[in-house]
Length: 393
Ligand code: NZQ
Ligand code: ZN
Image 1 (cartoon, protein in one colour):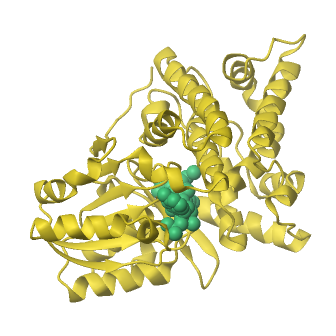
Image 2 (image 1 turned 180 degrees about the horizontal axis):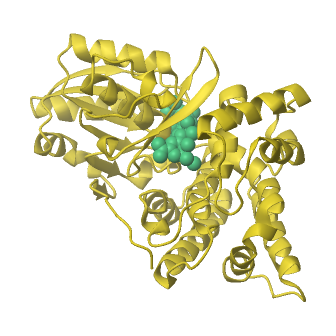
């Protein structure tokens, strides 16, 4: 087993009515003047924002609010949040929503932590974060895992660049996770979320060298659990137990647990998808489903033992005559699963048809974002990235 650091400081408050604890948790973590940050309309319509405001009022906690975070959250909204928080002397950011709202909150927190710098520098990686304000999350969609991850992904809407910043500084102090909030999600968002959750573990799964048994068992169990409950929710979206299984999986999949002790994670599918998200504003999980089969077919020979194990131990494929056939059968089985839950397996099915020029632009953007090359299953350079985009058309 390789040495590793596992740091997951977020306090999880899970289950029905866990929102009742929001004010006490904010006080525990030193918040007294709160920015409530949220997305479009879902959390307003459900009454959740009003409920949060009432609970904070009852506890005597000052608050201001800023809604309007869009999926693939914009830098302009982050700047608006930083300005509003400064005007109101805010000392705590409460995200009410999904990955986009949490990531926007984390970016605001970075901006407040080092007000002398431009926050976008962190996402262009021209400097690293040194300070941040505290953030917490009230989760309304199981998907990105931002409620426990060290990551924040922001889109510069002027340039179309979608970029991430990773640091333990932005990890949420606490996450309120009530699966009932996810009952109002459209099927497409639920299924995209399930794909994203699976992919956070799959990015870690396709690695080189030995992987500890304990890590494999957790990873394989997590992927199979999400597949099982995604199918349940596709037919029965009101199923609370499945909502709960998927919500807890979203956090465990991206808090580092499923990658402990191996030689490094891949992340190429995510990086390739982020460029698509920046250019075409697609739903992240659906974008991953559209790119993964092509990525897998492009790289599997360079990571054959892992693709064979994935085929047999995750997808339940019977070993074929050759390892290559087994690996390919595993990829096809995952593609079948994506189809079964009405997720795309190509960019056309995702609803986009990039031109050759746009493919080159996507690959150049990806190359720039990753500093030249990316991948552990197979190291990908510019020409490889272009080829995977072409295969995924
Ligand atoms: O804006 P509202 O009206 O709330 O609608 C949202 C949005 O349209 C809706 N929604 C959320 N909760 C709902 C609901 N609709 C009905 N009922 C509810 N309870 O769902 C839509 C998607 O929301 P969003 O926050 O964008 O979803 P998700 O959690 O999938 O976040 C996606 C973003 O996270 C980034 C993605 O790239 C993307 O920008 N990621 C962040 C990561 C991280 N920070 O660790 C890791 C991921 O790999 C990912 O890159
Ligand atoms: Zn993701």
